[in-house]
Length: 125
Image (cartoon, rainbow, N blue to C red):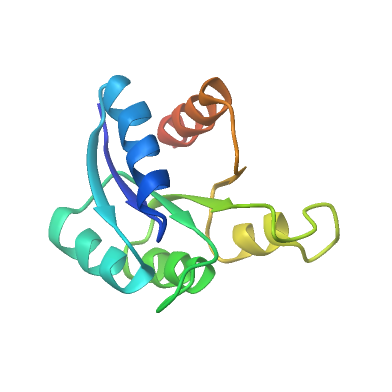
């Protein structure tokens, strides 16, 4: 399957996503923030990055922007705990896409919905 980088400062969330994706046959790389996430991508060259938005040291929007700039064509998914009004113009969804995210996921999520988004992004040309 795919090699996936999970960037999230919440250890429990990284572990939950790791289990979901490993059960689906994916290989996982993890990072607790955007700075280490960029370094992990440089080292492991993953197929997909799933990044939280609100993190210390380097937040997710700039992480996604920097990753997409350095690795054109990299597939990225932005995650948010819903700390933003998702329905307003200029909100999380619109901004994440402008920064390079191919899809967005709001936490908490259902496993089936999460896997559907992951599979959709991995299958994009």
